[in-house]
Image 1 (cartoon, rainbow, N blue to C red):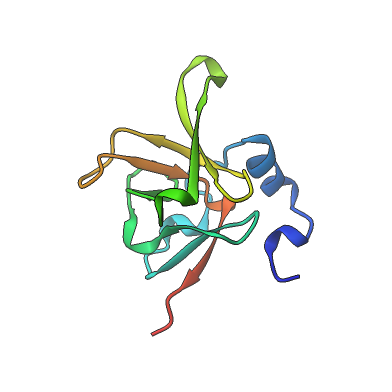
Image 2 (spheres, helix red, strand yellow; image 1 turned 90 degrees about the vertical axis):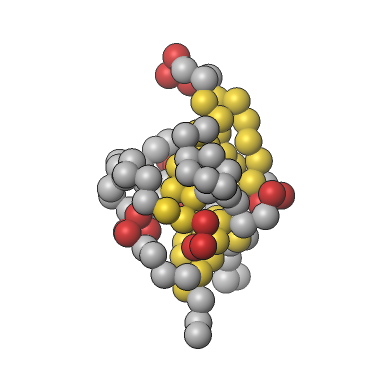
Length: 126
């Protein structure tokens, strides 16, 4: 099986995808990734974000203005840690990806703040 889900998840990946954890800011190599390409859910391999929607939010996590397609993700109310946030999950496998906030740039005004460890990157071949 070629999908990431077919292998065992490392404890760090398991914590983020299955326990809705958060990686340390600035710890992901994908934070500095700026090539064209697709960001896929590490849990199932489905495309969840495109490189064209990525921007540097200064927060330390890969950030996007929109998902690859609206049906690629699901959102849920997250009331943990005495705050209300909007959690982002992969629509295909339910893996926790991160959160979305209403403080992003145009054109959406949204900041999808995503754990890099929850993604794999596939560069566009020219």
